[in-house]
Image (cartoon, rainbow, N blue to C red; front, side):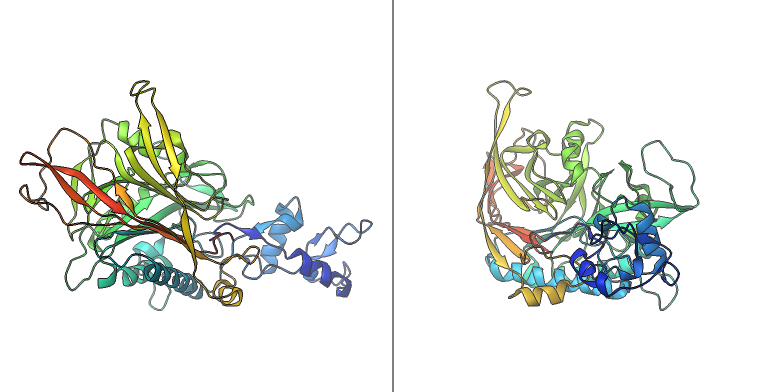
Length: 494
């Protein structure tokens, strides 16, 4: 699905409307005039004649004046799509996500020994102004007010807390949040704190909710709910216009905000994956959001001697384990990114999966071998691109348009799809040190566990067999056949 901004003005509809629009400078109801594309001799046209893209966040006169004054080319000015009624906006996005998840479940392996990994693209949750109020994640607010981020979390928990998803893992794209603040100076020199826009100060977050599916009647929620913060603000993350709230400059997100409310997050069962690395059901994984992958976040954390312990989830239990030496599976949720060999942190033979909401290669899965013949530091990655089968989320263009209208853009009648990858084996995790684990019996093998991924998101299937050396169970030494499904929750090439 396409999760990027769109042109604010419907040029074709505007051109068709201009001959009928007879405002003069004296009676034009808006303060700003734009270039008339039909008449080279007429330099300006009343903004009341312009037809905006449905769902564009530019609607009122103040917004119209702002866009006109800040766009060098009026007809290429972009906007975020979304419903100005935030409650309806969230409900619409939740409905699309639910539809994609159900479609992924329908087409993915029904084998309970297959772990399905569902990945949605970056920026799926951002609203008509480009971000939701951060306060709604921490503050219940005034009775009767709608708290967008809390409601998104509750809705996603409702999806994953079902018996049929007990063998699934979900990376639900990212949520963009902003907080108005009085903080005027950066702290520690490494965050984009207190960005001033239109006389107001704002802080920003871009984070992905990550869940392991479970049946609450059988398993508690410990270690099943995580938040993955993005570190760097990319030039592609926000629009070029200087509108609030909207950081355009490169820098870092204000992830200190998450740490400030960590106690309340943990009370709700959430833990942070701050350094890219984690385990899920004893599978070593890395996760990155868009430009963090290009900037080699997972690699830098892998090489950082100060990072020794990483989160571990699954089994209804949260723990911290020693950082692995490499990933069996790497995940990337992005908008405008592709897999970068220099950023790989896989064990040789491991698999990386990327789901994008903006680029040409929206769904990528590669299995990669590392050739150390030139030395550990001089070796090279050799990766093979894996193919997928595509499954439409909606039955027709009309049905897709009705569901996505005003929230996401469908390009060239390309409908949202689930991209399903075939099963393969997950490489065993190397290392000489034995790590004791309560879920591994030194005298028995572990049952098969598979993984799957999707294109509106992605789904991957994985099957695990415990490999034993003598009587020592080496954690993660297992083969895991898995399938990937990619589901792009917004039309796959919107």
